[in-house]
Image (cartoon, rainbow, N blue to C red):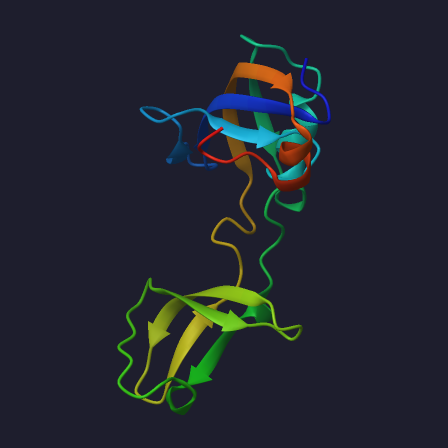
Length: 155
């Protein structure tokens, strides 16, 4: 059964509230993660606890237990002068900035102006209720390395 320190592989379909498919493992390898390492959104991880191989479940994850609420203050302009010379920027492009603590912060370009670019530092799914359809494909004990570092594609 799914519990902390187990490697779990799941097939999934993720939809938004309009029923549009946002992501899916269909045609791909199942998603692998170590349960209890917070590698997937909290609301989904909690709902998977106790499931076993072959189990299926529909899970609705509200924003607070997914990618959080949208924060409008995380949409802001960056003066063109702050960008390296000659950089071409397009709407939809992801740039990596630096947070207050020196951490890497991805931002999406949402508007290009002559004097600035407007970026959004919210996760693309912030504010969204997430609708998952899950099938558990594998559950096994995690190794000490997997508990410390997570699962890699080579595992």
